[in-house]
Length: 498
Image (cartoon, rainbow, N blue to C red; front, side, top):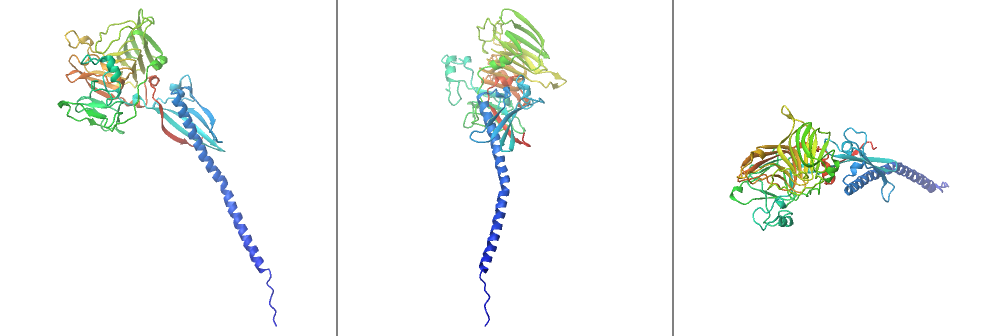
């Protein structure tokens, strides 16, 4: 009889082998998982560091919203992101070859002279990881447009224009609002056939057009934008059979655009002035020189002007101590010197950057142009900022005709023009004979639409031409007159982080 071999324990061996294999697999899986932990942690830290950098950018934008001039302080800081272990560092980035932002000269060390923008860097940190985001900020400026108005209606002090019921006080109460909300008795000023607005336009109102006005320049890339805040179409056709033509839009018409709003005063420009005059002032520009007359600070005596225009010149004309009792209006100018009144009479050619500001009016008495070498104009800019009116001189004699001594034909003005409380306007625009064309090369910003002629015909036909340099350059201290908020126009990550 053959005996059977004992096989006790065979199952145990199989179990041990299975357990060993399972353990090895578990160890391999654990090793794989734990081996990915550093990479996962680094990935999380990278995301957290970038989020921290963006938090720093948001914090700077918040601080800037409280103080539009924060950039002038060369502000930088390091902060911890609330309720986290991450942090960020904000650093201002100098411009124009400067090695650092300088609080004494922030305009030249922070503001890029080519673009009118400034940059900051926000570096976020999480664990051992850091990431940097660079933001470029720029104001949406009146200098972005050849033409800006708050209201497309006559300045209230120029009423009454037809009936005694429409007084200046009535107009001030009723007409300082968009066309859709103001009474029909308010003056609606229209663009006429033959008018050319050669550049981007913005109005916080809407447009009234008679005939074939041309808005924007043909063939531009990108095209000139025609921004109007009034809905729904942004424009309407004036009544009358002569207004049957349609405008030409060389660029997109953008109704419902965000209003810009005009600054309240030019006091910040006065603070930035490096040349101060007082009372009635005559300025004749000639290349790098300016000559003329002004008053002493008391307003009691005449002072001759003959000096070189300083670098980055900001000339401000203040009301003299003996005050100004008369308000000249464009409808009744007499061009008589009144000692304390800060009226500036200006003409000539210039070959240095210059901004002229006034407590009162600026009156253009002749062509105002960049100096030419041959046919090439100097690469300089002029700004004119009046608290009241910027006016083109146009006198009328006793017979109601143009006065040759105070009248100009085919006037050319190369300047950024701003009338803070009133208008850019031609004196006596609705009287006398046709004077040709008013050529403006630069930018125009005004609170109320200023007439320059009528279809009667009187005054001038408009030819307004945008100076594209103003997209990225400003006349000296022109930014100081603006209150528009800074917007982030571009962000990019800096690699490697700093």
